[in-house]
Image (tube, rainbow, N blue to C red):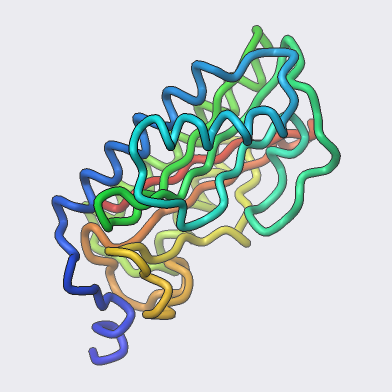
Length: 220
């Protein structure tokens, strides 16, 4: 129990409402960025734009580097560098992954979007959100630990015809900085994660084509 409590420790500023506010503001930023991403834009230009949006919305600070990935770079994990500086094509896929502090609390959300009319890209983007919702509901309904959440996610992704990237297994958040608690990945947390403390990450790949999709949000 002590280990669980340490891995779910929070600071003096923490409140669930603070986390939910950070979540709302992060989604506001993602939606605005997605509106500004257009075919013909370089991935690096989207990165610059993302900082402009966050400053416009009044962030406290960034707590992890913002990631906007175009095309084949949607297969990259957070720690991997993008290949080159691709231009968003007329039919293409991209995701936005933000880690931002709002009023001392850490927001961390991400989603995938498409431009044009490629049906498989559209399906991939939808599938990442659908799978996230299924796993989130499984957590809420069954109160399972982290390893079971990701076992279920892998099972469901396979049933849907996608490949789940099991290197991406979620992580802690709280009032800034959560990193002092060194809680490890959600997928390795051997207890049922509590509300407002963990980010569920889902990253899938198309089974044959070189792109994927990403979705993450707070377990709340």
